Length: 178
Image (tube, rainbow, N blue to C red):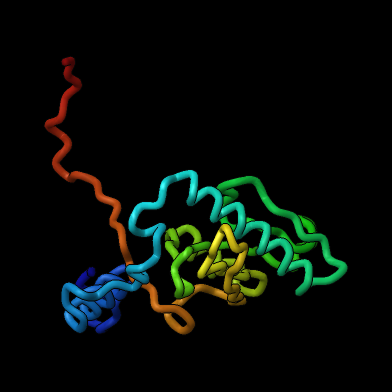
């Protein structure tokens, strides 16, 4: 935090997130965990099972959105499309950018990148998050929730889970051979 921000008692957004995480850990100790510990994908589902869950969730998402937006074009995007998974409308005239999240867990919990969160803010008027949870592949049952608008602390419990770092003292590094 710079000295100007410190003097004005303003906290930057990254510093706010860091302090939020510290307070949550202080409140809940080592037991603090946002994710449902019984969610199989968190404890290490086989990659092929996670792929099946994601494919199932996409089918669910497309079906649910066609019911919600009758008469509108609903198009699943290529895998790992930045920002959204399903487009309602057209690129020229978008109605909704929908990100689909899936879990076998019994609560609507999910992982979210900062890029995904930022996309929801930048496109808040058209952004929809679809969470397919309590997925049972063999029974083909699930629970489904939608959230329209930005992903922020007003509607979600958000926990920063990962840091990106850069070593500041890399000036002494040199190329080496084995």
